[in-house]
Structures are given as structure tokens and as C-alpha cells.
Length: 471
Ligand SMILES: *[C@@H]1O[C@H](CO)[C@@H](O)[C@H](O)[C@H]1NC(C)=O
Ligand SMILES: *[C@@H]1O[C@H](CO)[C@@H](O)[C@H](O)[C@H]1NC(C)=O
Ligand SMILES: *[C@@H]1O[C@H](CO)[C@@H](O)[C@H](O)[C@H]1NC(C)=O
Ligand SMILES: *[C@@H]1O[C@H](CO)[C@@H](O)[C@H](O)[C@H]1NC(C)=O
Ligand SMILES: *[C@@H]1O[C@H](CO)[C@@H](O)[C@H](O)[C@H]1NC(C)=O
Ligand SMILES: *[C@@H]1O[C@H](CO)[C@@H](O)[C@H](O)[C@H]1NC(C)=O
Ligand SMILES: *[C@@H]1O[C@H](CO)[C@@H](O)[C@H](O)[C@H]1NC(C)=O
Ligand SMILES: *[C@@H]1O[C@H](CO)[C@@H](O)[C@H](O)[C@H]1NC(C)=O
Ligand SMILES: *[C@@H]1O[C@H](CO)[C@@H](O)[C@H](O)[C@H]1NC(C)=O
Image 1: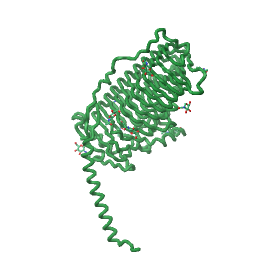
Image 2 (image 1 turned 180 degrees about the vertical axis):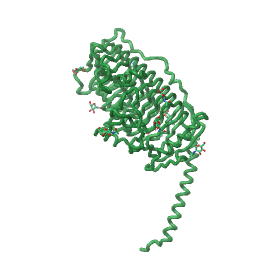
Image 3 (image 1 turned 90 degrees about the vertical axis):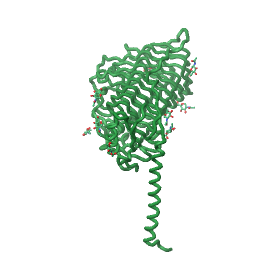
Image 4 (image 1 turned 30 degrees about the vertical axis):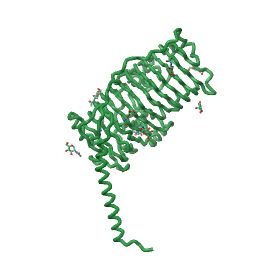
């Protein structure tokens, strides 16, 4: 066989590479105009637009883009008072460590873009512990900043055409399990002390820990998130609204190793001192799969109080419990005015679960006389199949959970259910049209009427989204 002469070889290389370059160039041009025709719903559109590649971003899955993100956002922050800016992450694989958002700003992750979270701890700056927690959750020390972090902002959006954020969490889960961390693992998205926040149309996978954490925010819209993590991964909560007011979480699909949604407001004496409740929260059209955790947990950190939470049109499959209240002596605070309706559940350990003895304290400095107030808990219009326990409701001795109302609920039990279908201690309330019949502490209402669900709308439900373009 004739060997390819060197000159011919170089000729071929030259032709092939010029074709490639032409193709890349045309893709770039086509790419920009194709991008410009993409639209998305948002609380605010922006006057200025940039691509991550304008700031040296490289989407090869190997080059770190932390600097590119930081310089892009530093640059675009100058437009905050001039119509705002959007930063587009185009198709590609973008490795990055933690970076900070700015106000009047949109981060848009294209449908074919994947943000890959760096596994190098040096790419994750450390932050002080949260004031309402007093310590990190994984250890007493500080915490790693979240992948996408923002604090003291107004009008900030993280969205995309269902683009992906991959937390690459496996090494973090391993370090956590083998107790190699005294600093709390990073979350994927955390926005603190901010007003007008939108997080929407994204797929979040394999977070090192929690996925989405709005903390002490107002006017928060979370919409259209797909959140996926192995069902045995540690603390991979889906969405954790924490000390936030006026929040909506809708159209989300969550499979995780911890609670799909966990509503919080601080831990024991730290949460009491911080004193910022989660209130006026609506969760709707949620699908949850979490065999070892709750569909919606209220607590266990609830010392700043949780009130006026509404949830409707919720589906849970192969999940440990429906709505679960978790609290303990020493928490103080309250969980009250909770309204849930239209929940469909299949293969559940518990439909209703309340735990007054959750324990888990930040340190021994909690006040053992600080009793939580759990009252005004309303559940109605639910169907469940293949359930092991209908309800396990454990209040606190001398501090009963009161004002419980459950109506129009049909629970089908598994072939081998727990013998006591409803196990109630230290609770007070009523039921109406509930099968199997509830415990004696929750007697049937004489008039068979339904439990209350509010008719008014939360202000966040009236927010009209605009149609924005990537140009
Ligand atoms: C950042 O902003 C300045 C001022 O608007 C602009 O001139 C400059 O080109 C920008 N930097 C980059 C890398 O785009
Ligand atoms: C991001 O914000 C945190 C908290 O304000 C700060 O400590 C950190 O230095 C910021 N990082 C960058 C790159 O600006
Ligand atoms: C951010 O907001 C919090 C709460 O209002 C405040 O305590 C803190 O000082 C603010 N930080 C900055 C950097 O403005
Ligand atoms: C978003 O992507 C996820 C993962 O590929 C997929 O399961 C989900 O259906 C997508 N959502 C939408 C609205 O397209
Ligand atoms: C973590 O704790 C170990 C001892 O348990 C200590 O040697 C190490 O310095 C700590 N690391 C950090 C980053 O604080
Ligand atoms: C974003 O998500 C919402 C809610 O799931 C959906 O109605 C909307 O069509 C999505 N928009 C885009 C651009 O994907
Ligand atoms: C009872 O709940 C079911 C959903 O499980 C609902 O379809 C039905 O309309 C409810 N009945 C009444 C009278 O509200
Ligand atoms: C019912 O639940 C049990 C667990 O209690 C599970 O093993 C079984 O597969 C479920 N059956 C159906 C039909 O989903
Ligand atoms: C009912 O709940 C109480 C309080 O948690 C517990 O001590 C008891 O063992 C339970 N009863 C049964 C039969 O499971």
C-alpha cells in the first residue's frame, strides 16, 4: 500500500480545517441570529445583551469559566440603571465555580447549554453562616458559596429554555458521608435579602446539597423547574423557601434524596432572634418522587414562624409522606394557617405526618421552654393509594397541635398496612368524610362540611410576565 506523502497529507489537513473553520464561522453567525429569535417569559426584559463567550467563556467542559462569569456580570452590572442586562450562556458545556449575580439582571441558560459545577473546592469561596441558623448545617464552620449566588439584589432572573445546571455532586456526597467536611456544602442557586426574584425553566441535576434556596426574599417566582438527584443522595432538597414573603412555586417536577419542597425560617434561638417568617407562599402543580422524605415539609427549622402556606394540585409518587410538619421543643416559632387541597398520592408510607419530637439542635444553647405553636392546619380533597399509615400525628405533651381540619380524603391502604391506621397523640381538631375513619382526637364534624381554603389571591399571583427576546 502506498504511503500518503507528507505534502498531500498537509493539503488534506488544510482543506479539512478550512471547511471546519467556515462551518464554525457560519454557525457563529447563524447562532447569534438564531439566538435572537428565542423568547422567554420574565418579570422584566433587558435593554442590553451579552454572551458568555464575549468575556472569554469556553464551552468545552474542561476550561473554568468562573472568571468569565465574574467579569461578564461585573461588566453588565453597569447597566443596572440603564435598562438592565441579560447574559446568555450559549450551547456548550461550561465548567464553573461559584459566581455572583447583580440587580436588574437576567442569566439565561440556553436549552443546549450545561453549566457544570466545578469539583475543585478552590473554585468555591466561603461565606459566613446564616444568621438564622447560627452554624452550618454540615458542620459548625462556614459554608461554601452557592454555584449561582446573589445577595441584596432587586429584580434578578435565572432562567433558560430548560437549560441544565449539573452540580456534579457525587464527590461532595462522598465527603459529607465520610465526615470530611466541616464547611457546609454548596447549593446550586441561593438568593438572599432580595426583592423580585425569578428562577424558572431550568433543569437542575445532582446538586451537592439543596438545589434552590431563596433566603429572606420578597416577591419570588419559581416556575418550571425539573430537579433530579439520586433518591439516596444526602440533603438534596428541591426548593427551600426560607424566611421569604410572597412566593410562588409552580409547575415543578422533583425527584430527590430529601424533601421536594422544605419550607423553613431559622433554627432555634438563632431563628427566634432573626425573627423572619416564611409567609404568603403558594405551591401548585408540583410532582414529587422522594421515597425517604416529604413532598412538602414545614420545618424542621421553623423558629421564625411559617404562616399562610397554600398548596394545590400536588402529585406524589413513591414518597415517604405528603405534607409533613417537623418541629421540636426548643424551636419556638409557629406553623399556622396552612391550606392544602387536591393532592393525589400513590405508594406512600404516610399521607399525613406531624412530628413534635424532631430534635436536631444547632447547639446546646436552645431554650427548652421555647415551645412551637402548631395551629390552623387544613387539608382537603385528597386521594391516596397503596399507603402504609394513613396518619401519624405526634404533637408535643402540654403543647398540642390544634385547629387541625381534614376533609374529603380517601386513603387506600397497602396489602400490609400498619395496624393503627391513624395514630394521634397530643393533637386536636376535626375531620369530615375521611376514609379510613380518623382517630378519636379528630372526631367527625357534625355537618360534614369542608375545611377552609382561602379564596383571595396572593399578590405574587397577579404578576404578569413579559415576553423577552435574546437580543
Ligand atoms: C465592558 O464594558 C465596557 C463599557 O461599556 C465596554 O467598553 C467593554 O468592551 C466591556 N468589556 C467586554 C469584555 O466586553
Ligand atoms: C460574592 O459575594 C460574596 C458575599 O457578598 C462575597 O463574599 C464574594 O467576594 C463575592 N464574590 C465575587 C467574585 O465578587
Ligand atoms: C444586605 O441586607 C441585609 C438584610 O437587610 C443587611 O443586614 C446587610 O447589611 C445587607 N448587606 C449589604 C452588603 O448591603
Ligand atoms: C426539561 O428537561 C428535562 C430533562 O431532560 C425533561 O425531563 C423535562 O421534561 C424538560 N421540561 C420541559 C418543560 O421541556
Ligand atoms: C476541619 O476540621 C479538622 C479537624 O476536625 C481540622 O483539622 C481542619 O483544619 C478543619 N478544616 C477547616 C477547613 O476548617
Ligand atoms: C417556562 O415554564 C412555564 C411553566 O412551566 C411554561 O408555561 C413556559 O412555557 C416555559 N417557557 C419556556 C420558554 O420554556
Ligand atoms: C373530593 O376530593 C376529590 C379529589 O380527591 C375531588 O375530585 C372531589 O371533587 C371532592 N369532592 C368535593 C365534594 O369537593
Ligand atoms: C405498594 O407499596 C409497596 C410498598 O409499601 C410497594 O412495594 C408496591 O410496589 C406498591 N404497589 C403498587 C401497585 O404500586
Ligand atoms: C403511636 O404513636 C406513638 C407516639 O409516637 C408511639 O409511641 C406509639 O408506639 C404508636 N403506636 C403504634 C401502635 O404504632
